[in-house]
Image (tube, rainbow, N blue to C red; front, top):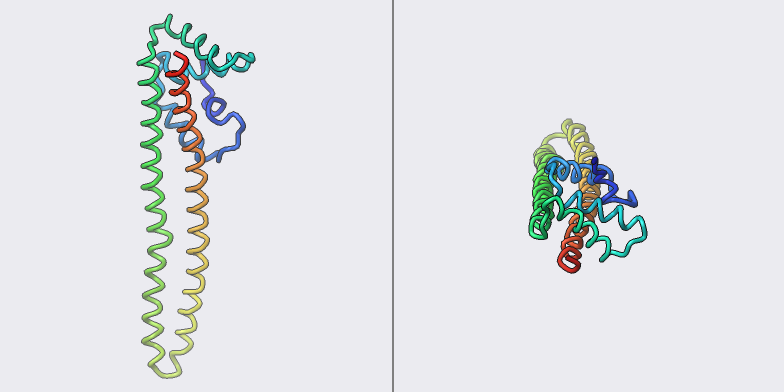
Length: 183
């Protein structure tokens, strides 16, 4: 049985594709062949598609899964495993985001400081150096624009990832609540 993780966690396809695919790939890589939370969730989704209410869907899916040896504790442990995978992905994303900020923002801010120092030195020199000062000023202006664009791109990626992460994370937590409530 193939599990369409995108259908399970992004049924309306309204999450950022890149962020969602990265999170779902990590979840898929952590998936085992045993009947676990993902197969349980897929069963609930199938039952819900037949207009079965949530309580009945959870109970029916669990009744079937329990014949394969699944217990409530193993189901919750499995769901928590996927929360851990999501958490690790969030940490990895944060590290990558920090690297991007260092590479695309902080290093360029440092470059601005260096160029401004050279401008100050050249202003004290004779008129012949004024042309060089003008060139450095143009570089600074370009770097400011690059910083704004890089920061906007990084912020957009962060916001898209955060939305995907929160949606999937909340879905799993809500399923755990339903498991505890209905089973």
